[in-house]
Length: 235
Image (cartoon, rainbow, N blue to C red; front, side, top):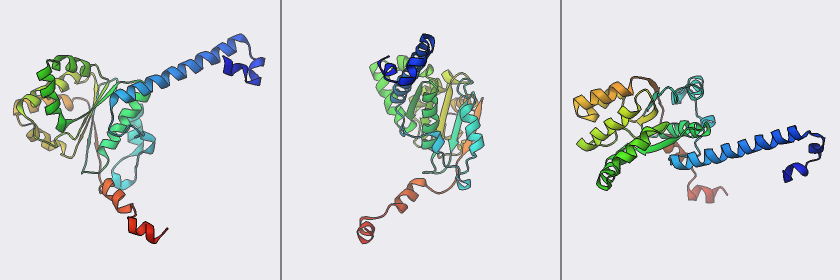
């Protein structure tokens, strides 16, 4: 209200118009606070990844039109699984985080988990007797990101727990899976044929596949960064 009084044009507005501006401003402020809260809770590896900065050069194997259609579509509400595969350093995690960040901007809850660490985290949860509570909270999360799927071997208990996580979300909640391992090798990675069949059946029920290509972006970044000697030679 105080800010409004300092603006010359406000004096010419009606009470209703001034009230509408105040309401709009409050809505924007609340949306920003909600977005900040959701982003912090998501704990994304790359919280600043934004879909607008997507590298869609032909060598990357990404179609901007397709990605934009996915982002603006109903994949979250429809419970789709987005699988992002490709070689190491191709930008899988960045893209997953960009999708997660945009989901937060749209008011959706997001959770980021690294699959190789999942077994240890699950052991801790079981030991503390909080696995059921954690599983229930995760089932209510709008978007779950499972990063580096297939990077480390699955143990028996972790395999069964992963089945529970996937089953809770099948066709109801959105999941993003990133993996260096091509999808046709996932069955062998999961190990147990029965559980593998069940997990893959649910993952592929509603699926959007993105396959990234090209050389490692991390290696390119290192190669393009000038060394200390180069900086001193070319001040």
